Amino acid sequence: MTTTETTHQPIRRAALIAGAALLALAVLSGLANFGVMENLVTEGDAEKTAHDIREAGALFRYGVAGFFLTAILDVVAAWALLVFFAPVHEGLATLAAWLRAVHAGVFTVAIAQLAAVPRLLAAGTTDQLHAEALSKINTFHEIWDGALGLFGVHLALLGYLAYKSRYVPTWVGVLLVIAGLGYLVDTLGALLVPGYTFEVSVFTFVGEAVLMIWLVVKGRSVTVNGRTPASSIR
Image 1 (cartoon, rainbow, N blue to C red):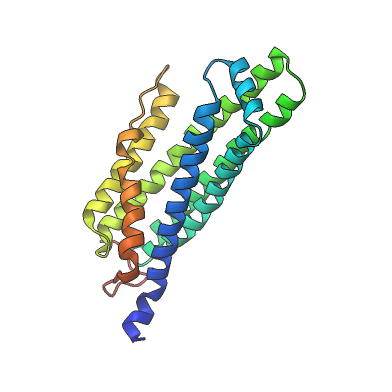
Image 2: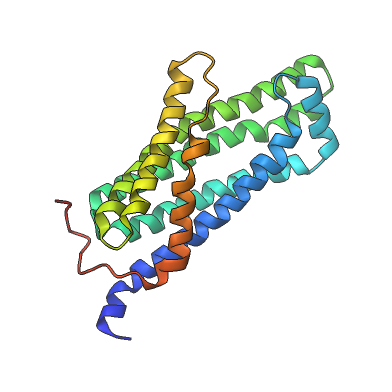
């Protein structure tokens, strides 16, 4: 192995780890959210939601476990992306990593709301218990929506780092910034605008997918162009 290959190996390894973690995260999150929650939870109908969760048996618990695994993968991705972008600006890369890690922590608090639902429904079949169960599910979504604001700032920082990196295509950085702004708009909209339902992130999330694919496909051959972790952005 040449000196150049040895120098770039940690960055390339981090790219592959980040890409794999993001890919696994996307699959698990999709299954848990769209495969489980969207099918079992009926907005505004506590009785039907309780019935469907009971009928699904262990499926709801699998969905909760899937969300928990995504939180773990978020931390893995945060570390790998820190290593990958540190050559651009270590301070901003560290801040971005911490934002993603804090997002994962807040998301874990949200998941705890879901984890309590099966126990509530096992305690009885009264309307009050059904209402409490649906309330916990709604609280999960509210906490998650708030956490996505942190995630949006994380993506925007990654986009800036990617744009300045010289080893990630600038258009990937632009798409990441747009994706981050989409999450920020949704979070602020939910906080400031009564009845806000429009989701900008549904259209802007493309940047996340592009980064994931680029890391998996191109990460193994990335070249840092002589930058060092102590480099600063000019």
